[in-house]
Length: 306
Image 1 (cartoon, rainbow, N blue to C red):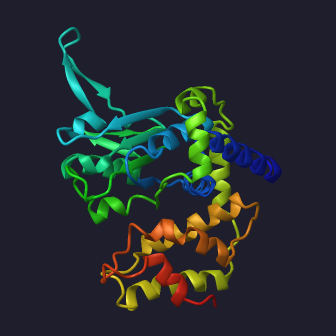
Image 2: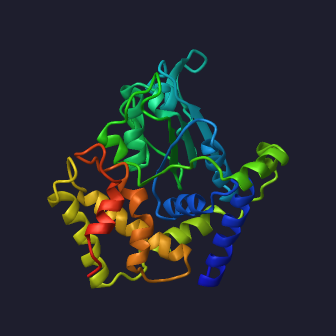
């Protein structure tokens, strides 16, 4: 697939997603960027603003197998990964795969599950495999987790530990629609009906080709200096409880490349880094002062482009 076809397919995906998720084109672009960068996405917001619909929309548009888990406090890891059941007919154990064995896994309200169940996804998200009964099983490729999380102040939530949060490449919040988009929602047909009518814009091979191309986008020494300056400031400024890890730095660079591709460029500029910075660091940095400005705002204001 050549560059022109890449752009055509990406624009088609964004246009189609805009017909389902109204008034949220920037968030749609960020979510697509996360997929192009082969990352997992965390959506933090109130119930009912379209988090589940967004996940299902991308699964349809990308032609991928989709499964959904509604996390609850009484869930067990086996409900996510699967279980081996003894079959008397053939006198042996047979593995029954759980919903994690899909291309796109929607982990709905992930922070309503206990930490033990949350951690069942760690190996899957990091290694794209699960180990059960001493046997390692590969997950389908591509594999993405799109997790939704309710605000931590709501009753019945278990905060995700830092190790789990770090597995998510990006974190976004959809927020309420503006007045015009909400009016369209009120007068339009049910979004689920429109979702069922969506046609896929890509196949697995085309998506894989795009993801591989992201790796080869050009980054100058000056651009790398800027990324390093952001990372160093997060560690040395004293504004945050702990700074960005090397994994977070790699995530920022990789997401910036995907954003550049989405904007029809084969090289990365500082504006790409700035566009995705908030989504990459908002779940990784915790300000020392709870009333301080958002982490990304502090980084952008205090770190100059070399």
